[in-house]
Image 1 (tube, helix red, strand yellow):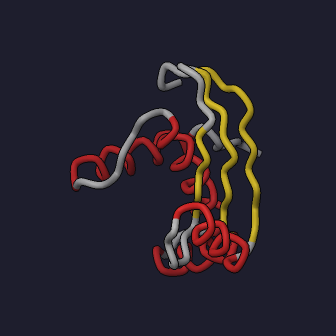
Image 2 (cartoon, helix red, strand yellow):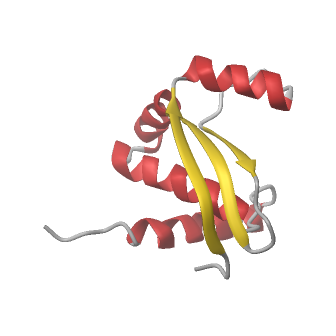
Length: 112
């Protein structure tokens, strides 16, 4: 979806310390974050290394009062949406991003 093709997408699940080191080393940010996405997209073929702090996702799930699994899916979708060109800096962009995250999370729903 989103008019892109899937190339090589690698999710790397790590802890806060590991992701903080990446944030400091590559982005010159000295803050914790839940996700860092390295974009290797070529045209419409999305490729990336996506680093996700499991600790941040757990804490966010508690803060947002959602299940851990739902928050993890949201963060995973969030990274892909950035790669597809979605932004979240303005209020309008953030609202669209959240709507798209919810849309993508529903794709993971499986009846047992």
